[in-house]
Length: 135
Ligand SMILES: [Zn+2]
Image 1 (cartoon, rainbow, N blue to C red):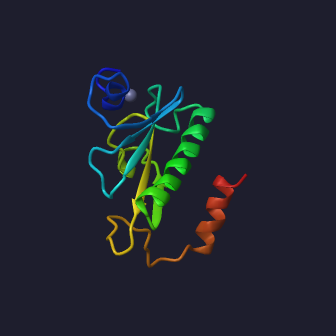
Image 2: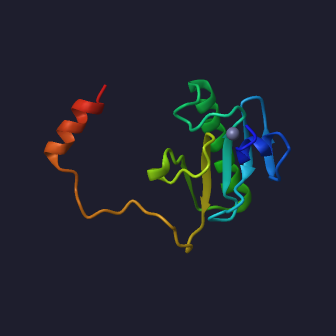
Image 3: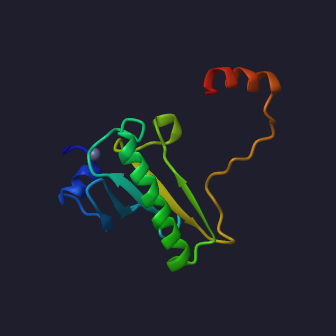
């Protein structure tokens, strides 16, 4: 897709630092890194997000995320890693092509997001969510 920057990088029509490439995915450096070594695992084919991509592609992408997270620990001396995907605008998705962030973290550096909350899960809400989401 010509209007997709990741497709353009894959096709060599836009600049990108490609670390790895196979038949299902690529690993590139994020152009706007939030930490040293911030990488993206992107699907080779265009899908709007990882929920739209076939299971085998998503599984492969997460295995590559694990592999490159390990490389960040070993080669960059990262002290921690965030692995995640933003799906949909409310979750912060900006580029509509399936990708997984691999964000190395270093002791003493501030994070630009956290999972802090003051509200414990309500028992009644937990029961309702279990009915909706439980398998
Ligand atoms: Zn694309």
